[in-house]
Length: 161
Image (cartoon, rainbow, N blue to C red; front, top):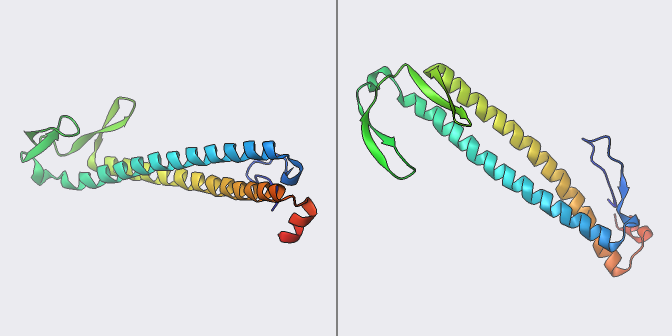
């Protein structure tokens, strides 16, 4: 447990944590803490995006030919709406990012949102795996720091694991 390596990145070498001094271990732990925070923030952002794509896809179920001409609420801001009437029900404008919109029929729009949900979910899984690996490395680093603070040597650590 006192040696760490990242299996997904073969260009990195294995490091024996017991050969690092307390300052190096502390810096490593701080770096890992920062990376874990970034991973958590990224997961939070991706979860929000995933939810928005899912909501957008499910809203398309309400756009039917029967809805044409019905009264709807149109958002002007996050908290202000005006009444309007449903116009076209065959096509919708889909926000594809950075201020660009694409006109799609309902089925294509549903497929687009489902594909976005799938992609975001895959990215979340990748980040979770990286986070677990970084967390494991952090735990090993903390263990070695504690060992060094208690004055135990590498031989003692090997007996503990």
